[in-house]
Length: 99
Image (cartoon, rainbow, N blue to C red; front, side, top):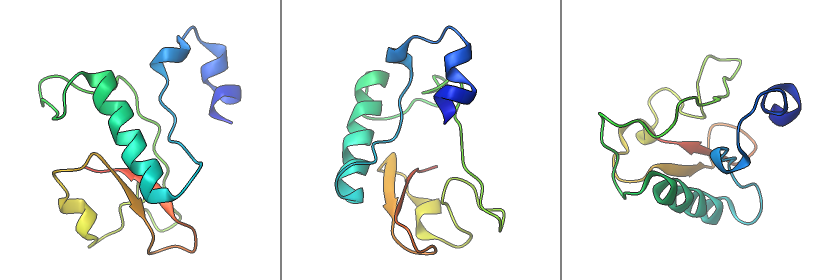
């Protein structure tokens, strides 16, 4: 949907697009996506002076939460992992980037 609505209309090289994997177990997909991002970034930790992406497309829930980070959730304090599976708060398991 994102490719059709946006990315297919601008000259973004495919190697610069990093969709979250949706196959396999969510925890495994989150680990794989974290490795993908770290490889693209070239380091296992983020440097605040060097952003990971130019643009990030985030989802927003009807209750105002962003990127499956729900108010009061312990994931809001996550500082080790870049990506996590979120199995609570909604019927479906989601994968999100952490803060």
